[in-house]
Image (cartoon, rainbow, N blue to C red; front, top):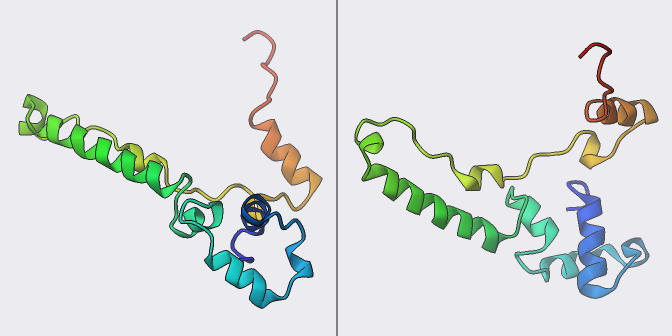
Length: 124
């Protein structure tokens, strides 16, 4: 759990238990507190491969099922074309750039940032 997403664990422990320095506690205590977290916590959601809470993901799947049923009863569904996109697939966790969402160097951060803040070229 610590190796997979330490930042999420720190956030969950501080939010649910008020623990800001988990390293001061014995590992056995931290493990017990981790297993006591709700399924909607950040670390449990990440373990399930979700970027949102379990409740939100299940609601998205219900909407996807409704869209699919409506589509199956349409002319497009009869001809198997224009299948609706699923919302739940977009909510699955995608690991951020860098190790556990961190940047290993300032250069790596600047390269990531440059993709979003590029200045338009002259004449465009």
